[in-house]
Length: 193
Image (cartoon, rainbow, N blue to C red):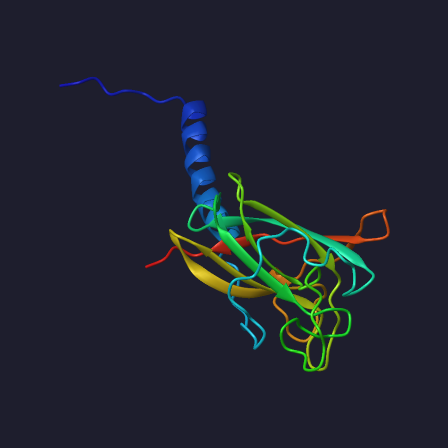
């Protein structure tokens, strides 16, 4: 018969503290990594937006400049997704979308549309103008984000918590000290299949 091993009270405390820490940490991590909410595609999406990082280089779409940056992450572990396609489009300072306003010639240097690829750390960034609010809609930028191992997400970035907009879709404008604004918007994709 084997002699009974004794465990010191201190060791018992450490073991139980470690187990308790795991129990409380695992749900917290799971709660932090949630997919970005979906939103409407809207009627103004056009395939094949140009690959560019400045959506309005000419400045003709509006005066207030904006830089938007963020990361694309993947469920279930929220690791950065390299090579994700981020398509963005938005209205100009008058609430008009390129390609959809009758009688208005589009400025090729200010289409307010782009296709971007994320870098190895899942980052993306683009320059644009602050979009207008138009009847029935708060200011927003449309997103269509896709990655080979994850599903395609259609969502929108908003700049204020209003009209029932989900908190996860809001990125407040921050002044950049140069007369423009900045906003950060991370996107988490759910796995395909």
